[in-house]
Length: 244
Image (cartoon, rainbow, N blue to C red; front, side):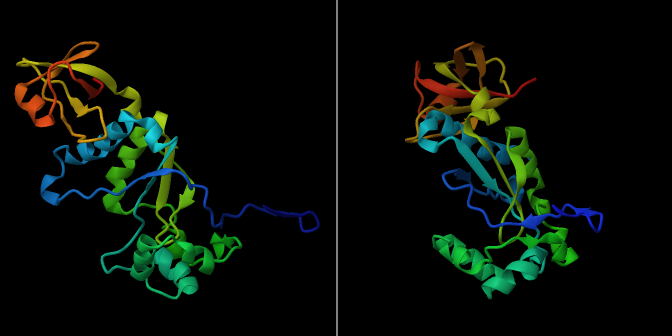
């Protein structure tokens, strides 16, 4: 905020400030599903399987979780946010900076990026328009993350300006709504919509549910699914059921 009594003016301005507040967070990475497998639930299975894995041992993964969504990059590979901002300080292409961030400890960002706030109003409009906006192909992932309980808190990626979302591990819906059940092998007359996973990090497996919940702590699984998951009668499994 800027204010002057003598000029009778007050302004509220947005500024970009370098931050490292996500140190110590667990990060769930970007998922890419081949086009021929999209639309059939594969993306949701892959996404939620990560959280079922975390539920097997929450202490192993920590209290807070972060997800970084891809920012705006056009078909020609141009990145408006980078072209108008980062390129001037890093003196390299977006691809070079992105690769360097993947293979180093990112010290180069602290070394080269200004330590002072950068007022957004001073950036070209094409850069302003993409700050905190995810790539069109990432909209579905963004919605799924929001459904899980992730929130955007005005933090963006330093390279492409894409949004970063975060939440507490215990608040992730798949973790919160999953339960431990005993496995019973048998023919299931009906199949409920949900996911079933093993309950250990080692040899972890997850599948779409092909059986049903018999009572509060017993799930009936077809023998084929039990064998595919390496589950025996009486083993514990983790179950997530879709709400009606």
